[in-house]
Image (cartoon, rainbow, N blue to C red):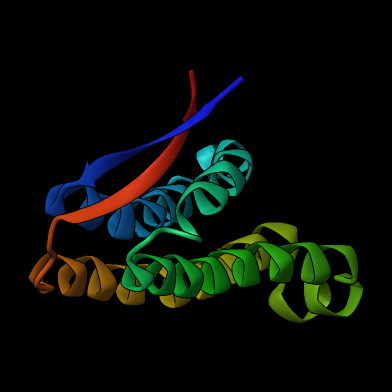
Length: 135
């Protein structure tokens, strides 16, 4: 089987969307915690798809959004597993959940909105990449 190289164009709009998608999903999953388990699974695929994008800026936006979201998710796991003293300090399990969620909102949402805005203001250019296809 022969391998043929063809040129593919990645539009500026596709680059901008790729830079924004992880932040957008993280903000939605943080504000609507019922979607968090779905987004944890979906974010893995999203991260893998855009982390090695030909435009390095896309990878940077995705990497920082990943640090924030996965840091928040990891914090939930740690705090909720070792929560005996915290539960007593905050006055019960509901208050503990709400406190952890509020901290997560403060970490993910403002910085995610900032990155959505910054990605929208970037000067994105169309990219031409070579792709190998089997004939």
